[in-house]
Length: 116
Image (cartoon, rainbow, N blue to C red):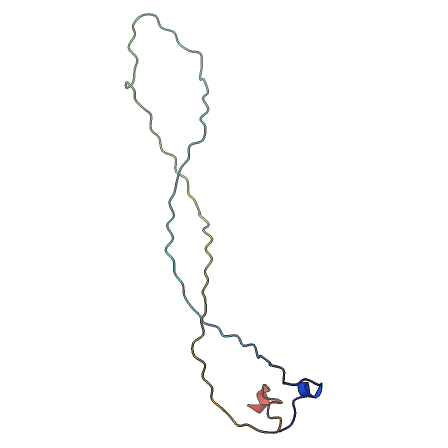
């Protein structure tokens, strides 16, 4: 068996090498998102329309006692909701299918398409 090049430089054992690999998995993830609208009133501004009217005597006021006026304001909204999805990956058991072994360099060109 021939000696590895790393060993020739005075190392007592070969250097451990790794070959990085990347796998891809298409997934569809889902998360329910609840959008709850809210309306916060801002401070009101009062503007007087004309001069006050002063009436003598016991004059009945028009309108409803302790009444309120109601009106509606609507506004279309678009809510941006940033969500970050992620996942963890846990590898399972390792399997190996052994090919040939040799004392010759059978790895040179192993990644070339012409060698497949």
